[in-house]
Length: 568
Image (cartoon, rainbow, N blue to C red; front, side, top):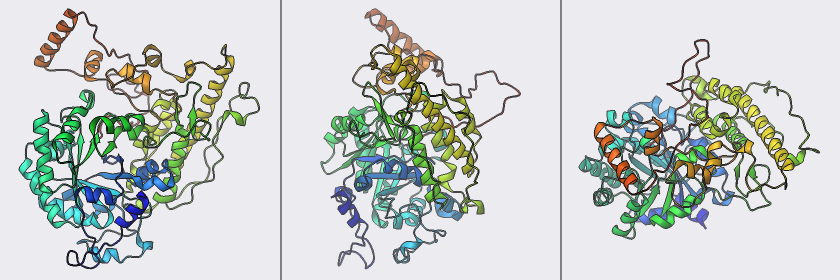
């Protein structure tokens, strides 16, 4: 049913007396939301991280009939640069095999044959799609939006980015004190753009102020508001937890027809249903949770139907294997970003493939692929966003694995944009590491006293997870959260950030004198009440580059993407 509704949304809907011939009738609010299938899960806009290939990967874990039930957002684009600089447009958004015309002619675009369609917004496999811009000027916002309107379902205004670049550029969350300007930008697109306009905001200091802020967006014509349950200052080590009660307050105090998306605290698939229930939101958006686990939107397969891609331990916990996910990602890159047929691959390893799993010896070093893969039009000076994002994506995906296998970390760090052979070598190393991990797991099971321990063997879990007691409820301690979410390193899993108090205790974050004084008062009050402070953080044994470590002059310098730069 969702597919039928969504398919109709992309037809040229004619409304006699309301829309010119060849032009889609513009829907608004809940009518628009229902026209794209009323999706319950949403892939967040992330700077250079929610590009076409990653959207395809995230959708690929849903059943084919349900892949258009995932609403995906593009990365955040800069409106002025997108409007004024053809090179910027062509390097970030590629809906046609040629360059985007400027000024855009929607009627001409609507008459193009399917053979001229390329990647972004392609009705066959990249819908529903919302394109997001940061902006601080109504005209820039509209002019940029007109370029993408023929290739998407809606255009979104970024009001959530908390990074320093947003402060310097005067956009994102640093516009929330300029609500009249925000209202003018949203209203201009609502009145003059062919597709709906939406907005993504952060909560303010109080629920009442947040409600008034949301009303500004809705009154100006926003069809959907996405609410990130964190304030602007909550970023990096001070990220902390999103406050879902703010979203529930909005749900109860805004008109019932208002469409609200919730964002924040989505670490694993089970959190989606919990968030929908507690907030009353229409849909749930995931950003960082999706980066570390692109399968987060998919239901796990039934017991006994795991296949080769999904691993389930003897304790019942499981997840998609990182080698399987990386394979899918690489095949998408080959097929769509490079226009090549993916290489033939052997079936993923299962312990049952070996006649004697326990006694099998590990293989020697595997040779990398000999045949070099051709590159795409990126060679001509136009950057391919699907290639430039690869290294950062794989560091997120493989974070648990590279903490155990430094050769994979080093190989990935040396990869350069467009060097597909190098990424294929990394995949070979990943598959070999996962194979050995599965063999060791089965071996430890066989050597255990009863053959079926209640939890994964020591080789499959961290020291933190064994020390923390698994507890239900909100993620109020990083150790407890690790215990809930942790899987063996060969399985996709979320990255658990220390909470602000834990980051302070660990020395990763410093407070002002005023904040330190308030913290000391809280500690004294806690001690007087006979309570022990919770959430102690252990040192993470992840040997990545650290500014505080002593540097080896002879060591090779490699770039490893930093955590925490996710906004949109």
